[in-house]
Length: 178
Image (cartoon, rainbow, N blue to C red; front, side, top):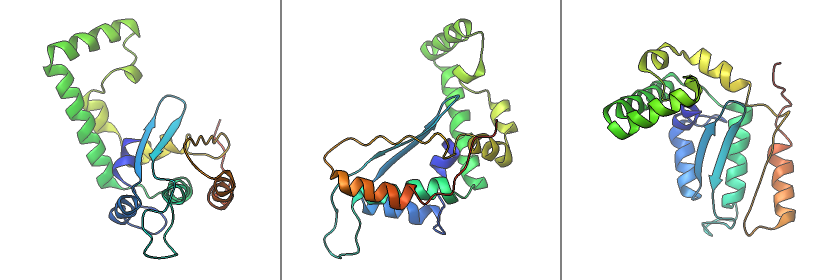
């Protein structure tokens, strides 16, 4: 998930173009995962940010465009993986250098049987990951067979239905490999 967060190329756009699109539409994105699910969380205005052009889209429509791109045509990039690896290695180093964090890590390790899913990831495990490994692991979560969308805020339900149909309804069907 961190590689997706640090990457972002999709729909023929570069990572930088996607970032500028999000900035222009006041869209904040957070991509995270756990053992079972991938979470795409967005904060956005429901109205149009700019009134300069009729072609401008609302923040909500911008989010649906990004979600469509993430699921249908995300481009996995080696440099994004390297940035994600660096972040995980730094986190592990920070934990080991902090008495409080190291104690909490040790306690958590004892509680969960040293299951690495719940602990900071050692540098050697992070460095061993390849882009293919990450893409394969994420592909099992980035499917349409168990897609759930939750929207809260001040929005027009008819507009939401139009956007879901236009952007989510056009994503090619995919299923988790069992």
